[in-house]
Image 1 (cartoon, each protein chain N blue to C red):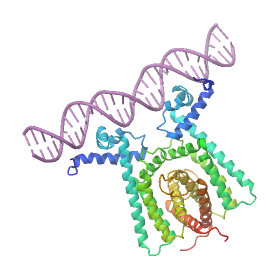
Image 2: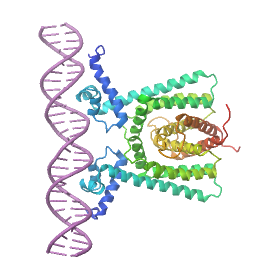
Image 3: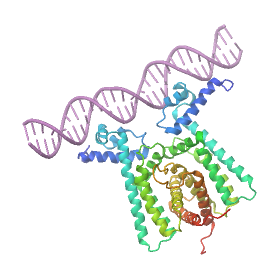
Image 4: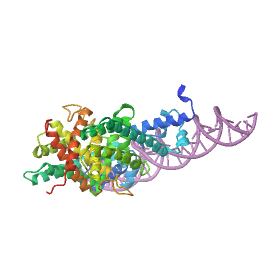
Length: 219
Length: 219
DNA sequence: TGACATTTCAAACACTTGTTTTATACTGAT
DNA sequence: ATCAGTATAAAACAAGTGTTTGAAATGTCA
């Protein structure tokens, strides 16, 4: 039965990583057992400890690879968009960001998995400190700051980052909440397609950003 | 007929609920064992199954109580605020909402616990379907819609709800992300106090809402 | 008081967990 | 062919899981 997938030596390690990625994302760290993973990867339970040195190490390696991949996809997607227009508007930048941000999270294979990963990491973190901030957040801040400076009004750096937090918050909440608001019976509370929500976030946020640029008015 | 006259029997039940609330929130469902709970509640392991019929039932009961309490605190806080002003502005409403939304999540005892609860529920739900939407989301939609209609520009109902999603998304993301951006070394990426972020969200969102009301028209 | 239901508890049950051990194959170099 | 080094596998290990059992307390009411 174990025909073609049973070959290579280094391949076992890859199969474990692949299975772990899937199962950790679907079920979280605690609910995924080593035996779940090795069953999916069609190898022995001891293989995880042999190749990775423990369940926790495997988890870190799995998540690290996912993070790097996600970051690179987003950044290259935005850079490509921004190089297409000679004089992009704020709305253009925001839509490019929204798409670059969401696309990796919704496309079939690893999309929902990444979302679950993040949700699981928010509570009990099994990752080394600083990895998330330095290898993931900072590069994203870098490229979005560039885009904002180029297309938006002049902003204080901290304010600009708060604006980006506002947008990310909206996008994440939309993605997580949208399936939730799919009403089994009765009219939908909000539009059910993601595109409409993206348009909303773009319009909403463009106005928000411009309002944050206006000098503080005495009240 | 057991009952309330005697505190001995009912007290065990309460202690279990209290301990479960704390531990489930701190560690999540899977990582909290019945023995953890009964140790904290100083009772026998069998007590959980006797009083609640199982770990899952205990979890549901725990979360249900927390949700109802959170909802009521928020709604009464907003209604109080809105009754104080005869002609409240949109900004006033938004600030009232932001405070009502965040206050229960940051005040010492149960604040972080609630946040963890939500995060844990986002991934693997252990709750009966519909409870969250009908008993928690809908009442909040009701009161926020009232506030928006009273203080903001005329909005299509679906658009109004998307605007509220935008605000909730910002607030949740701020709350979860803020401790994350506390930079161990170097200058902070964003302001570290919640008040500044609330001010930002209010300003950002007021402009966003007004922009969503304007018909698509050259200006 | 005795009879009865409710509540508590220690112990056991059946099962899963991550990890380690021991043994067996396979590799490539000497 | 011998030898180290690597990789896989079956089995065992110790600890922890939710739940159940059966007996002892405890309270309630006739």
